[in-house]
Length: 170
Image (tube, rainbow, N blue to C red; front, side, top):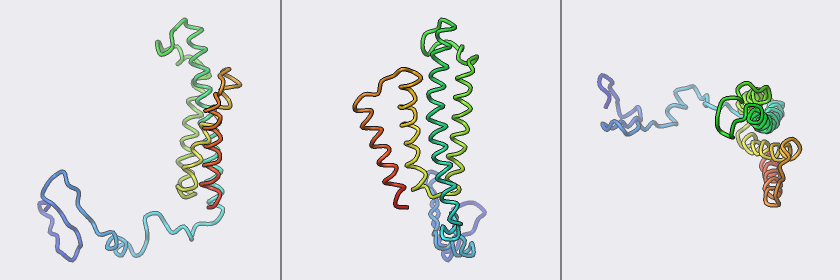
């Protein structure tokens, strides 16, 4: 038990004396004490437009993050050419506009993803994260002259089908 804190059996809290163990709390008691307010909020009280706002933010996140990967790699390659550096060495990329643009888009994409979870359920937002993989694969063919293998094309197809399958019924 914690020093100076008195616990009664009616509080439904089981404390252990070992420091590495976690206190067990009865969730129903916490829910009842909060006046019936759940931590995540009742999904039925959210306006229907929130789902679409969350989905739009999640799709935007995938696009921003996908483009950011391509821009950052493009910036790295250009910096390596300009400063005669080998991949993974030096700091020339910090002077490259494309790398910084990619980093800013990455931050914007992650903020959009974070905001999407405020509006839509995780079951809708999380599968759309695979969109960034597809965007990166498609754009790297155009801007970085990379070829997508047959297995990569099947992987992109599976990402799209899986995302639609997970979010389509909700």
